[in-house]
Length: 114
Length: 112
Image 1 (cartoon, rainbow over the protein chains, first blue to last red):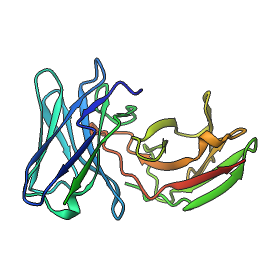
Image 2 (cartoon, each protein chain N blue to C red):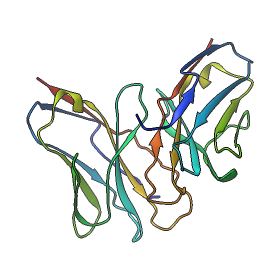
Image 3 (cartoon, chains in turn blue, cyan):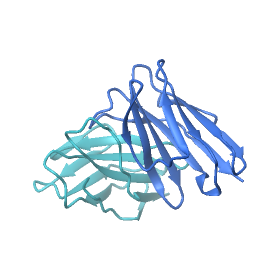
Image 4 (cartoon, helix red, strand yellow):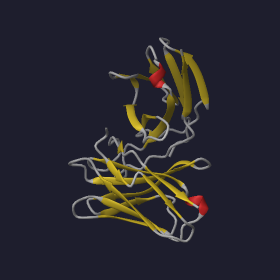
């Protein structure tokens, strides 16, 4: 158990819909990361937050947005869902968000878009 | 960020030592080498990180030659539960962002 929690574990929805994935970091960690893992693209970095502020952005689609709240939990919002958005979405957290900081990954949310 | 190249798959038997080599020819002076392990449908798990020579922890050893253009993850006496995907990553040593760039990884299959 990494100490990172993600909800829900599974999510099945239809194209065009909007969903919200939630992540609670390990106690004391200030930085949260979101990654997407699909069969054809592998594990891809989406976005990083540090203490409520966006710190780095990867290949995150404009239909996707995220935020980190004052209590440090984070949400990833996916809208206008397409079949290709079906994937495992992982949240990770680390102490201060810098290089060399060990990231602890949550169990993931499996999103299926029908 | 330096690109990494590692074998797509490897097979081993229980009790053997497994060495997975990763090449990173364009590694920068300040970059670190980091390895993560991922079991099916689980998030990646940090294994080990090093800068040069040898690093050892309770799980694995990491060997980095002087030119740092490659590295080798060594797993001693593997068991069936070590069957997983192993990712080699090069992490910038001087950045305030911790984003990780994962390659395709090496799928290790441990057989009885």
